[in-house]
Image 1 (tube, rainbow, N blue to C red):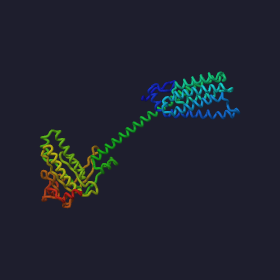
Image 2: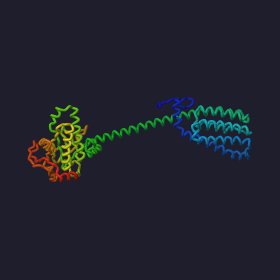
Image 3: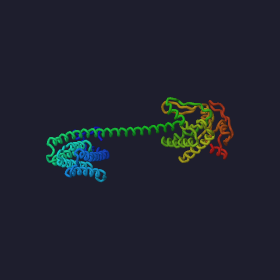
Image 4: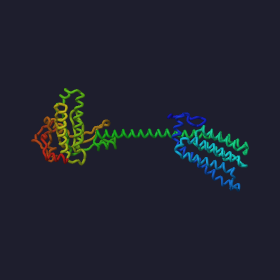
Length: 432
């Protein structure tokens, strides 16, 4: 629909026939109710005037005056019945027009039968048909002119010509009033259409905004721990930071990664790392650990960052085993000798968020440094567990003989290699 469709100056209707039909279809139910109300009101008023007129004149009118009245009432009743029949509702304008012409002709006969006839009621009928009947402008004008001529002709001179001459200006003034009404009705229709489009656009915009908001939240929750993400969402300028007294850090690194870089194409290398780290992410989610970050070919995760967590060290050990198993499976499928070095250490860390763009959640402290140094000292395809992690697991790990390791910048740390899973440890993992 055009934003500014043209409206005819004379009729007040849309110049576009297609737009006018659309308007009439949109108004069909309201116009039908209006048409029924018009005819019902006219019939009730006309019927009420019969006893009033009899009371004024002191006698009921004779048959020569009664049959035109009955004709008008019958025509109105037929029109009302027709407007309630679904089969003929589409032709409501023509039915109403034919009923008005017939009623005006009957009223002309009534004027001819009365000695003191006056066309006052005819003028009211004419005005009402123009102002309240929802027919098209041309049909209104044709109905008024034909009805007026029939009524004047059937009156046969019983009404002074001067009074009948009022029918001409009545038709003209009524047509002008109808033109103004048509124009205002269609302007209101256009405004309602524009308002409906604007409401629809705003709803679409709100729906898209909601989708973007949900995607942004999903990305935020994917990049950060949920508790931290909620804090940033509520206070964007704050930087959540806290000291966590006991966290088990899992540090895994690919053995011989430099050789893989030399032997694989960039696409193959990217596909390998994506498959490997996606499997690591799945393992972290499965065992309830928080992925911290990837550093080149290294993977860092932590257990126990959420307050009130229990069994975090046992779950970290279970995840380390899953990492080793996932690397072996992916290497076998891709015909690569893919092995890891994995280390675990338990201790306090500082956890927080850095940056104003591309937020980065990270952990710091000597615990992270020791885990990194232990990973470098771990045997190929082995899992090195510090004594602090062994104590946190309450001695329920199948560990080898502990060894004292001199770690650069960290001093002496006691650690042991994790052996095969014992039935007792497996039960602990399941309960954790």
